[in-house]
Image (cartoon, rainbow, N blue to C red):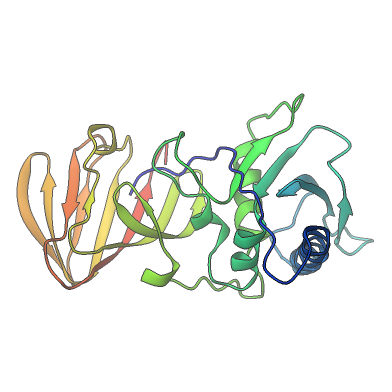
Length: 264
């Protein structure tokens, strides 16, 4: 239930039974291109594309890049996918074929795929920058906007959530809704025996947190005081206040997490 950070992640793709390795690789590359073109075509219709942007996508060992031109008074928006790395240093997304397929099929969203508790943790979907790229103050908002809007298909952009769409982070299950500077939102759940924010460096945030309990019960320790959070209630946690949540019950605990303010 903490911040989301982005580092590089890489998974080798192993050939499946019944196909030679070159045939399997060729099949995956073709499928990768088809999926990326679908995302590209969808992004061209996205109303959030209000300024030109370009970025790379690395799936396994294969690099692609996207050049997106925003709509103007004289021209419609145009988003194109090209093979190879960007010609100019840029940021890029990095994942593996299996994770890309899950995102394409709506089984995982990219923000959830990139969620991690600490910078050294593994995430199956990640972002990095090319050598020579110089990010400015607009970089993080652009990255987060692209991470959601490019990789979320359809209009309106619907985000499925629930325990089946989560990954573990900070000792809890989480499925990210939306993320931008100053605001973070997610579905969170605790299975029996799970303990969120158990590690000392996970216990506080430099910004306020609101946890809205939907279902189940969770023991919580807020600023050293123990109490119970039940479905139908919410708890507000001020900035820099220690907080932990534990589920000792058979029933799944589910909630909505909102984090906001400077630094969120």
